[in-house]
Image (cartoon, rainbow, N blue to C red; front, side, top):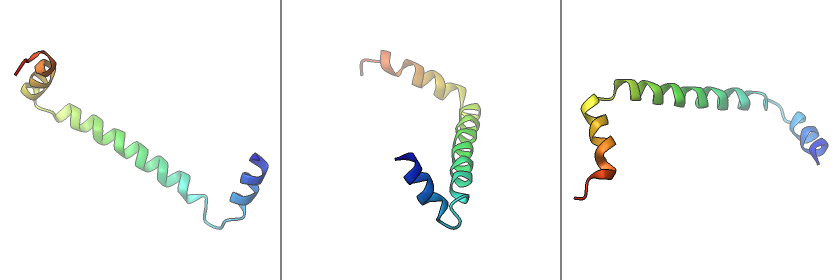
Length: 56
């Protein structure tokens, strides 16, 4: 089964760009997420921490 998939994928021209694109998207997402968390307001973090404890 793996030989069939590998053989089929090697016959497609330009297929090698897709893993590179997916790695860039994956990396950019997590860098953006870390940047968002670092820039998040500390008061907002406290509000979100106490959210499960509020009985409103």
